[in-house]
Length: 86
View 1 (cartoon, rainbow, N blue to C red):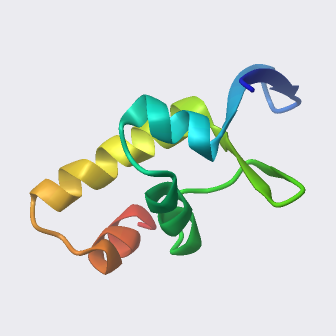
View 2 (spheres, rainbow, N blue to C red):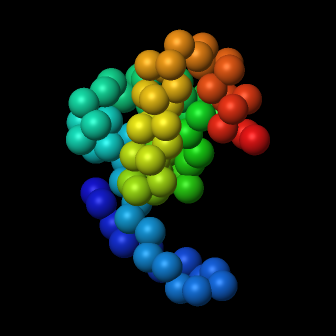
View 3 (cartoon, rainbow, N blue to C red):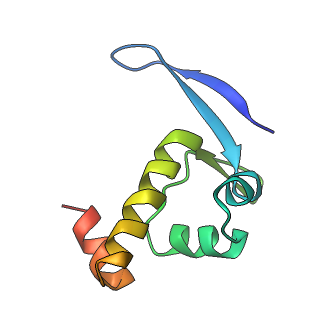
């Protein structure tokens, strides 16, 4: 399901898009956790195909790493949402 999509920005950059299920498997976390993170604003969807959420693989992997770091430091998810919106 992985696709490379070119978007027109200031510079042309390729984005590697993937499904929630595929990325969850790669990261060793549940699909429901990724869906929950999306529902509370921790993970952003790049697009939707029907009801399926399409994620930017690189961006989401970095975001999950940040979330894990903050959780290790003892922050709640609510605090993490605030911290990442700064």
